[in-house]
Amino acid sequence: MEQKSDSVVIIPMYNEKENAAAIIDAVIALPHTFDILVIDDNSPDGTADIVKAKQQEYPGRVHLVQRAGKLGLGTAYIEGFKWSLAHNYEYTFEMDADFSHNPNDLLALYKACAEEGADMSIGSRYVTGVNVVNWPMGRVLMSYYASAYVRIVTGMPVRDTTAGFVCYSRRVLQALPLDNIRFKGYAFQIEMKFTAYKYGFKIKEVPIIFVNRVLGTSKMNSSIFGEAVFGVIRLKWNSLFTKYPNYSK
Image (cartoon, rainbow, N blue to C red; front, side):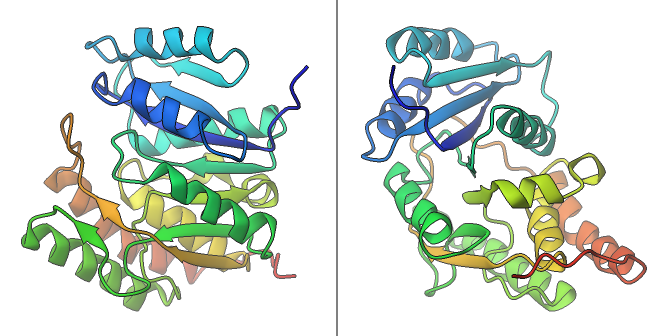
C-alpha cells in the first residue's frame, strides 16, 4: 500500500470545469506526494463530475466534499481544515484552482514549514517587490495598498496579508479557534494570518509569481474587498480586548 502523504492541498472550486482536471494533474505530478481535497460549492457546470473522474484515476489521493451551495471561501477552508485534522495530515495548504498559484511553489511552501521551522508559510506576491502577472494596474495597486493598509492597522509583519496560497502546520490549525473565524471572503485570509501572528506562531513568506487566471471567471467583487477594508479595523479593535495564548517556540 502506498505510504500516506503528510500533506493535503485544499482547493475550493465553484464553476472551475476548465481548470479542475489540469490543476489536479499538476499537483499529483509533483515530486513530493500531496493529497488533494476539493471543496465544491454545488457548481452547476459539472466541476464535481470532473473531480470524481480524477478520484478514479488517482485512488486515495483525491478527495471531494460537496456542499449544498455557494457558502463562501472562508467556510470552505474551515471545513477543509477540520477535514485535514480529522485525517491526521501534518501540513495543510490553501490554493486556488485557476493556476494563479503555480503548483510547483507548493514545494517551497512545504520546505519552509517541514525543513526551515516555520509554523505557517505564505506564498507572497509582495515580499520581493510586486510579482503579479496579467493583472490590470488598478487591481495590482488596490491589492498592494490593501496589504500595506492591513500591515499598518494590525502591526502584522506580513507583506502579503491577503494571500490565498498558504501552508499551515498541524499545530497551528489545532491551536486556532476555527469556529470563531468570522470572515467569509478575502478578509478570511487576513483573519487567519492575524490570529496566527497573535498566537506567536512563526510565519515565513516565500516569494512567488502570481499569474492572473486564463480560464474561467474571477470570483472577486467589491463586497469582498469592502469586508477586508472594514473588517481589519474590527479585527484590530477586538484584539485589544483579547488575551492570546503564546505558541512561540
